[in-house]
Image (cartoon, rainbow, N blue to C red):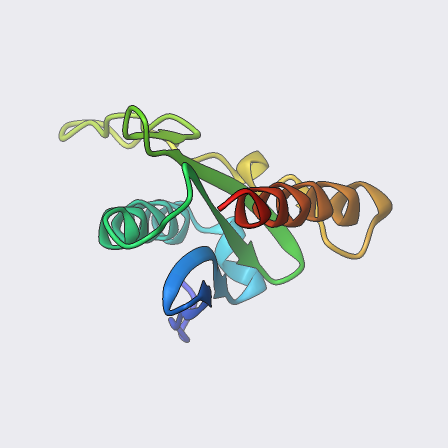
Length: 129
């Protein structure tokens, strides 16, 4: 497990209401199963905390581990968070939050394009308010 464990949370707000958030962890955490599970739990906890505050029908969040990004979203109409939660086993070690969840690098064209898709979706929802 990495010796340094921290998280930086950046929440973008409009009129003090959250419209997007980013959780940042060290790059080495992507290679540690317990760190990935903790990051996934933190993302889901953040959605629960922001659910009643966001004015948008869909709230996006990104988990960054170094340059690698995992994309999450909450659909307020039904409360579903994507990607879907996978139940942990109490008796077996299971990789329920695989490394490939953080499959895009922000420094690549594909990573930048996916990031901009989220930005444009948020922008469109804000403009529709």
